[in-house]
View 1: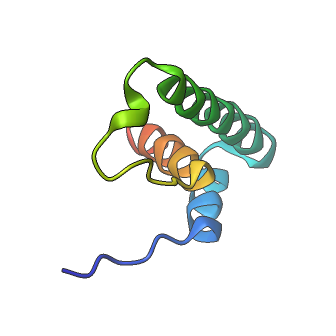
View 2: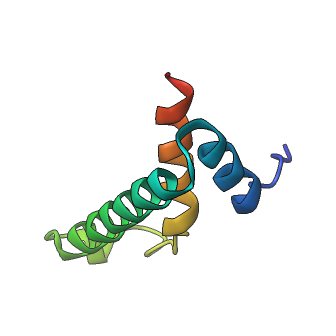
Length: 75
C-alpha cells in the first residue's frame, strides 16, 4: 500500500491560491506552532514514555500544511 508522497511545496501553492500569500503564511505559521505545542504536551503527559514502540517522530510542518489545506478546501 503505497501512498502518494506529500509535497509541501504543492500544498503551500494550493493554500496561497485560495487565501493569498500573506494569509497563507500566517495560517501555516499558526498551525505549525499548534502542532509543536501538541507534540510537546503529548510528550509531557504522564505515561507517554511507556508506549509500546516508543515515540514516533512526526513532521510538524507537513501536519500543519495538511491541516490548513483541509480547512481551505472547506471553503
